[in-house]
Image (tube, rainbow, N blue to C red; front, side):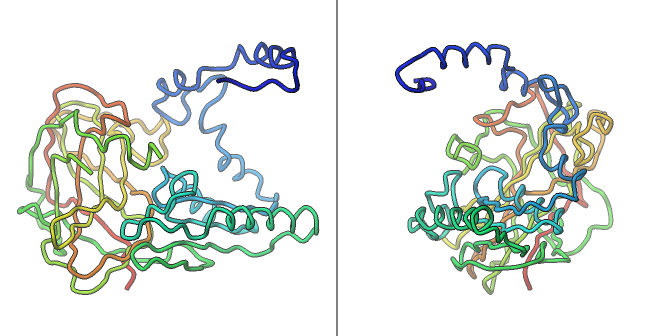
Length: 344
């Protein structure tokens, strides 16, 4: 339907549209970006990042009100990164179980009722700006309010991460998760990447699952178990092609066998580090083992007793991400592990 004109005249609208004819094609430009410092229009994604700009402007103490959702793309990670890096800036950070519009409760175990209601959300935003701009009394605190799914409750903290030392599980020979570190880097599994694998168009990126390889923790949880923070995968693998996408999913299997999606992470094998800079591009030798570290998107959830954890690996999410098409065979080696921020 396009942009509505101001008033009854279309003259201003026509002029505005003409002024924007030289705008970059965002999608076309984004498809050419492999690294953060690659050209994106007349700049780079790195240069455009608000976080990058804030790193050089620590003297600015304008108060922030930041909202995100555990199941809304990567907004929770953005909120937490800001909260961790800029503790000198007064801010209220809020992470709920919402979709992007924050009008639907996406908690894995309790759908329906929105907490807080949309009306209350807008009241909180209005109160923040009224205090800062009208009353000239901006906030001075640095606090994070986050929702924990499973127990369906709001919690408050002034520090993040909550868990300082994560619990490690190693990939085992029987497609299981073990707490004992292997002594040799032997091959554990081999599979062909299925480029039709997808999480469909109802995932966190469109606001499970066909998976070719699973690792699970057979012993059922004997007590409710809380995971709050960012799980981390360290994978030792080989690929028959020099460039492959790697997706990892943290899941929970109920006693009846139903699988709940919890969170996910992904990385392209050419990205040797989390910097995503071209200088750190990694050359992969086909069929030779290499290490991949993937930090999964953060979550906060309490799993009931009787559930067990699962790790799912894939080389494609066809409906959401462009995959490197080409016959690809993976091998997974002992020493691969997942570390979980389990609250003791």
